[in-house]
Image 1 (cartoon, one colour):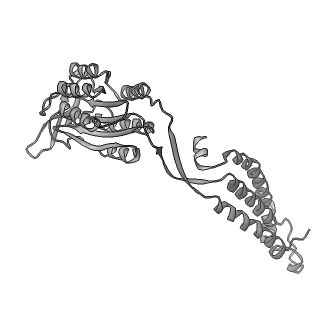
Image 2 (image 1 turned 180 degrees about the horizontal axis):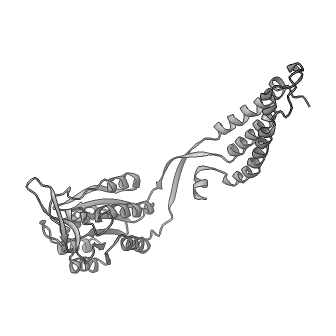
Image 3 (image 1 turned 90 degrees about the vertical axis):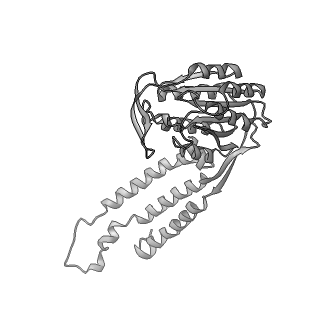
Length: 333
C-alpha cells in the first residue's frame, strides 16, 4: 500500500480497474470466438464480411474498454517521486564508526564480517530519516569518510563501497573514536551518538581508547560499542606475502570486550556482542529503538505528475473506436 501511495495520488480509484479488466477479458474472448463458421465459395465474396473483419468485429468495444482503463489510471493520479528528504532535520547526530582492518574479511559471517556489517549499517541509515549521520572508518588510522549529512542516499553508497584494508594494517580503535568525537564536538544537537563497530583490539595509533572515551564523555557524546566475531576458529587473514597479498588461515578473534565495555559504560552507552549476522541485525534494531528522535519531522516529497500520458491514451483510443466501427468495419446500429 505504501508503494501505491508513493506512486498514485488517489490509489483507491485503482479498485475500479477490477471490473474494467473483467469487461476487457469478456470482449477479448468474444473477439477470439468471432470466426466464420460457414464459407460459401459460390457466392460473391462482397456479400459476406471478410474473415479478418469477423475476427475483429468487437475491436471498437475493446478500444472503449482500454480507454476506460486509461481513464481510471489517469484519475488515480500517477506520479514519479522526483526528490525526497527531511525539511530542517533536527534529529540525533550519529557517527557510524566502522572497523575496516583486514580481520574484517574473516568468514565466520556469510560471506564475511565486512560485507554483513556494510549491509546492516546501510539499512540502519535508511531507517533514520530525521537524523544527520556521518561515517568514520579506522584500521591503521582513523579517517572521516562522510561528514554529518541528511543525504542518506550518498551515505549508504559510501558505506557499500567500503573495503577492508584501505587504511593499512592494525586496529586503531582510539584513533577511530577520536576522529568521530572530533566530528561531533561542534554539533548543536541535544543528542549525539557514536556507534563503534570492531572485531579486534586496539594495537596501533597515537590515541588510547580510554582517552578518546574521556573526550566523548566530556562533550556529552554517548558511545554504543559493537563487538563482532565468533569465539570459535574461523577462516580469515593471518599474514601477508612479500607482494602484500593476504594469506588466509584459521584464527580466533582477538576482540577486546573489556575495552569496549569500558568505553560504552564510561560514556553512558551500551556494549553489544554479535557472533553472527542475525545477532548484529538485532543489535542495530535495538539501538534504533533506544535512540528515537523526539521531534516532529517534516518530510518533503517532490513529484512529477504522469497523468497526462494515460489521459492522452484514453482520448486516442476513445476516438479510434468509432473510426473502426463505422469507417473500417462498417458496423451500423
